[in-house]
Amino acid sequence: MLLRKARSLYDKLETVFDKDGKEISFLFFFRVAISLVALIEIASLLVDLPSFFSLADTLIPQELMYLESGDFRYLHPFYGFLDANGLTSIFYRVAVPIYMVALLFLLLGTFTRFAASIALILQLIIFRSFAPFNYGYDFFLTMSLFYCLVFPVGKYFSIDSKILNRSKEVDLNYRRVLQLHLAIAYFFSGIAKGLDAGWWNGNSVWKALASVDNSFYSFPPLVLTVVGIGTVLLELSYPFLVYKKATRKYALAAIILMHSSIAVMMGLYAFSAIMIVWNVAAFGNLAIINKTSDVETV
Image (cartoon, rainbow, N blue to C red; front, top):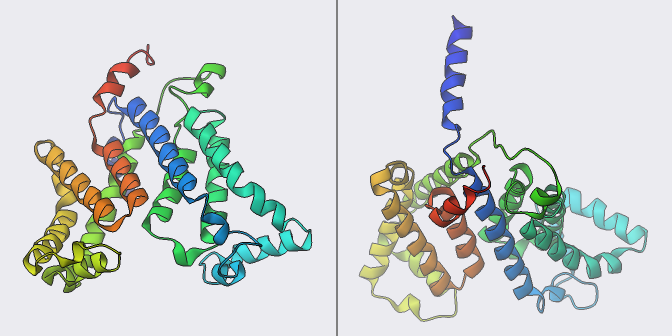
């Protein structure tokens, strides 16, 4: 009896991840979009990055920064090994270029899983080495590269698909994983914000805007209150709105507008870009890619 119930529960759970015919467009779009966002972001940091991640140009001793990292137990032995073998300066010079090359390989779909694994490892080492400067983008990029590693993102429209004679079939609705991830993330973010009185009276929105050198913090209090309450309600209702086909496009438009506003008002362009990519990849129509991908499935 118990075994039959467990089997029935497993069958129901399995249907959640049944293929829906949009796997090709999702895998291709996610690989390309994440690679592009990561490449543009690291390219924008090239001038300033030596100030954080080098021996000669650092403003704050790098050792003090990774002391504050939650990954200190991994970073300390790693940097100790580099110091002991005289490799520290070499690593600082080659880490970022190799990271960018790995992202480029991922973008083109060349040795895709290997490229994703190298990019993931270097992204963790580089950005966790100065954890005090990390924010939401860095964590979502880590998760994105992990998904690029475990999802078969190199199966379609890639160099790998041209040179490797592998099956084009996909056995799982990988898009559903991202959908569930987003639904959970927004819902619990909404709960956390809802428990903070500052989001109901506009103070939290004002503090966020005032923390950046801009004039948006001077909005009337009523506007800030409406924005704060609207953000809480949108994030709490997001999983339910995107679940229904009738309200999905409105929820997607609202969440994209929210992240676009964050980009403009707070200058968090990379974070907003990666969140928009996740939302479009998970719930967007991707109609153009769907039409093109029909050729791939023949």
